Amino acid sequence: MVKCPRCGYENDSSSTYCVNCSYILDASPTGNERKKWNLSTGKKVVLIVGIILIGFILFSFIHDVSKMYNNETLNVVEADSNVQSGSNYPYQINITYNGTWYGRVGDPNYLQEEQGSGNSRVSVNCVSWDRVSANISKGDQSSNLLRVQILRNGVVVAENSTSAPGGHVTVVYN
Image (cartoon, rainbow, N blue to C red; front, side, top):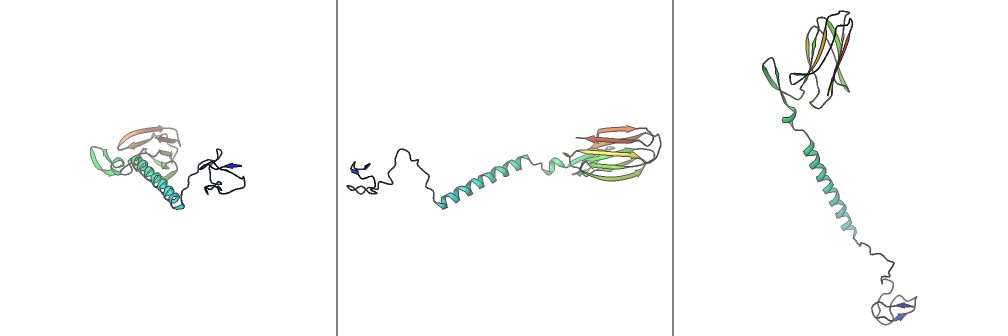
C-alpha cells in the first residue's frame, strides 16, 4: 500500500495516481531520492559560456599584469660618455685580444657565430631577461691575453680571460 502525500488515502502499491485526489504517486518524493537540478539545455550552454568568459578574462588580466612593456626593455646605453639610443638588445660582448679569434655568442639556445682579429665589440640579439654566453677561442697559439666581457647597457656584468696558448674563454651571465 502507498499512502498519498496530499490526502493520506491508502492506494494499491501498483497505483500511479491517488484514487481519492488524482495526485501523481510516482512523482512523490520518497526519503531516498535526491533533488536534481533541472536546467534546460539553453541554461547549461549559457552557464558554460559564462565560465569560459570568466576564465578568459582572468587569464587576460594575469597575462597583462605579468608582461613587460617596451619602456622596460628599451635601455639607454652609455659607452665612452656617449649616450646612444635605446635598444631591445641591451647586451654586447667585448673581446680584447691581439690576434685572431673565433667563437659563438648569444642566448645558449641560439648562438651566433663570430670571428675577428684584434679588439671587437659584438652586439648580441638577447633581451634583458635572456641568459647570455660567449665562447671565444684563440685562432693562434699566442700567449697574449684574451679577455671576454659581457656588457649589459654598457656596464661589465661578467668577465673571464686566459693567456694559455690556443686558449679558450667561456663567460655566462644570468
